[in-house]
Length: 286
Ligand code: SAM
Image 1 (tube, rainbow, N blue to C red):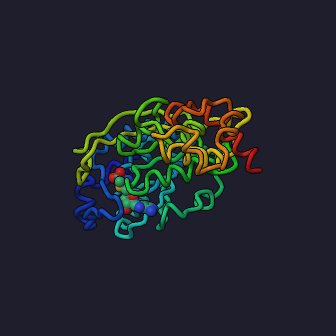
Image 2: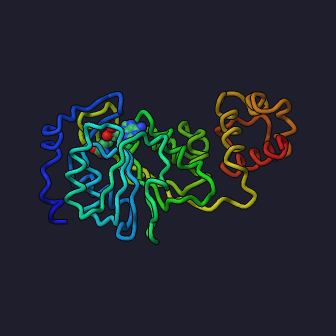
Image 3: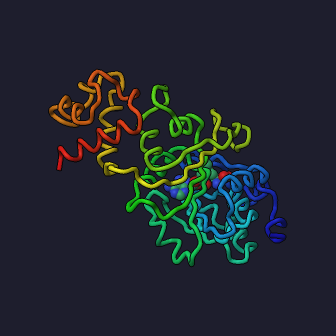
């Protein structure tokens, strides 16, 4: 840990390696190591964990994860400019940090991690905002379920975090809420002000925790749930008897089988309602 403490401040790392933030890569860097340690601690006890990190950039969160005792960190970064800075962290980490250059959307995480040798795998990231939800959906829809990771601790724009944890009847409630809560226990750990980032984004961010939970009894397939929520929320102001026409030719019989009142709208349905609806759709399309 002492060698990690000797690394230069992140502001100097960014200057020394010419890491001017690129909008195209969704780069908003965290400079405060107290904050990145706090995010690392929100991931739980890391001493028997391998942390898979997307987008380490200059390495603020990476350093937080290592200082907080992560057994290993495996990080995927697309920006080649950051690789030298990350190599310095790797050198100071007793071989605990592995950096892979590439696109996290295409990554085969388990192949990159290799044999976990009995350790848990956790995901932690300050995600690039332009692909944040795509990455979350990638991890929520892995098969088989339960997945290969034990938790996800992810920074999103606050508006996205609110969608993940939203309850039925609220404005933020939608596809992302249903899919996230079908798969995981979800919570918002804390908000992060725009000023914590360089450059400062326009909006507040938040750190979200997601812990995978077993599929409920009689659960639909994730594909059926995705198709059903896409149709229902695709036209969220319409009653389900109308909006589900994009899914099936006869929404009324589907709704009857799922015991859902046809004049309801998508945002009124609970997770349980969506599971019954998706299961009925799955049977009808089999
Ligand atoms: N973890 C750093 C921090 O907290 O300061 C940087 C976070 S920044 C919001 C997002 C990072 O993701 C950037 O370093 C960016 O280059 C990287 N990134 C963007 N798209 C990526 C992709 N498709 N695959 C891997 N990394 C990506």
